[in-house]
Every structure is written in C-alpha cells, then in structure tokens.
Image (cartoon, rainbow, N blue to C red; front, side, top):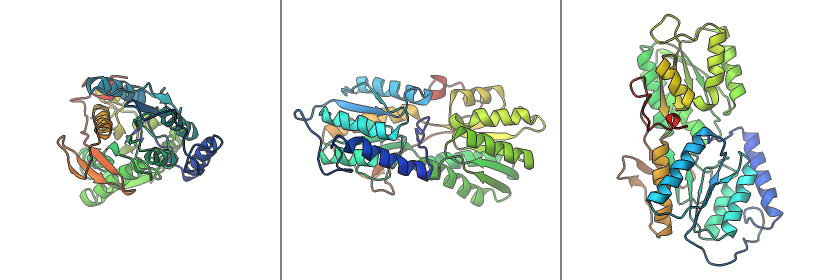
Length: 356
C-alpha cells in the first residue's frame, strides 16, 4: 500500500508504533475511539446507505487513478459514495477521518490504509457500530474488516522472479530492493521473490537491501551495492518509490544501458508507475508487475455493496479468477491476480500508469 501503492505502508516498526500512539491521541481527546477510550461515537441518527471513502494521499498518482476508478465504479454499481477524505499519509489523521465518517452515520467505509497497524482501532470502532469496512491494496494488521481487496503480492513477486531468472538465464547476481518488511505487501514481495529464486534459480545470488518504502534509502542502497560489486539484475519491490533513484545511480555509474546491449542491468519491478512503463517502452527497463487498479476499484465497490445488502462472504475461489483467503489476522482477503508487463504490452491504456 500497499497502496499497494503510492498507497504505500511506511513499514519501519518505530513508525508503525508511532502511528498507533498518534492515532489514539487524536481520537481520545474527542472521546471517540473505543480502541483508545471506553466511550463510543456520538450519532445524530440511524445509519445511511452512503459509503465513506478514506484516502491515504490524494497527491499520489496511483491513488488519484484508483480514486477516480472507485468513483466511476460507484456510479456504475449504484453505490452512493462520499468524496474521498485525504489523510496525506498521516496515520492519525486517517483514523480521525474515519471517526468523522462514522459520526456522520455512513453505512460503510472503504479505506486505503496509510499504516497497517494504526488503522486497526478505526476498523474496530466501525465494527462496533455495525459499519462494514473494505480495505484496498493494504491489509490491516487486525480488526474485523468485511473484505481486504489486494493483489496476490506473493504471486506478483514470483512473476517478477521468473521473468528475472529467464532473462538472466539462471545465472548472475541480483540486487533486491525490499519494501517495508513490517507491512504485508513488503513481506509478500520479498518472500515470494526469494522463495522462487531459491527453488527455481539456485544459480542466481540475491543481495537483499531494506528500504522501508523510502526513496532515499533505496537510492543509497543501490549506490552502495552497484559501486562495490557486479550486479546483473535489480528487483524493485516498488518502482514508484525506487525507480527514480535507481535510474540516477545507473546513469552516474555508466550502467544505464538498453536491453540487448553490453552492460545492460536487467530491471524488474512491481507497481507499474508511469515512468517505469516509459522506461520499458524505451528499452531501459525489462518488465514489471502492475497493481491491478481496475480490479481493486471494481471489487472494492462490489464488496461494500454486498455488505450494505447484508451478503456474507466466505473463503474460496471467486468468479473473477481470484481466491478469497483468510489472512494472518483473520480477515477475508480477495487476492486479485496481476500479470507481467513487457515491451509488448507496456502501452496498454488499461494500465494505471498510462492513465496518470
């Protein structure tokens, strides 16, 4: 987030703990949040059929496209959705935003969490009021959500691994720029990639460096590793976070070379931002696995509509090529598929990065 992107969970443990403290402080002052106090939310009347939308950062191109798609889907599926609130990547503000939506008697909430931990008290309070919550891209680390709508990040990472292994012919050294391992997306994108490399491409050495979804940390890691050893490939857990810095480092070191030319460093990423797609079309990046924003929006709206209609959900295969699973925190999660993008389809107008 995960927010997937863009929509990224800032995953350093200290920040997550800070987010929870700030979230509790923000709402306990108003005596609103049960996760921090013992009082409930004041209400001016019965729940409505309106759906509240809590955004993480509206200036993020990924989120702009996602929110536009959500609004479009809400119209098509006849769901009455309020304009998005903007947490501006402030976990405490997002909790306050959701508390405010609950006090307005919304019937449901869709949220793109800033932080997997800090969002939990807000979800708990919504559940206490009988208000269903659907989270998009980023899974909460607790609480009782009606549904988590996210990509199968383990599968995305495996697809990136398989493409990398194929292009390196099963040999060489790859720099893995990890996300925040305290977030579900970060963990999955690392575990999927490394499990695949270990079992399928044992001839490839992986050098892993944490970045906590931080652009400067990714740049520093790339600078350090690329200047000290031979690197044949780079796997970016998020191109929207890491690509600009990695490109700069490659250019500075004379390694920004097109595919097929001597010295080219194979680059595979997850997310599918505008610049990454442009670099694939120009021949400098090899492939990426994009966030399926169209599916996020379609099924987030479907699930909140189902919740308002009182429909129960269960684990198992869906009718749209995905699997609903019970995640590590007991929530149902629709793990949506995503496919590899190469030069052959990098201009597809359906890709979110080509809309931003």
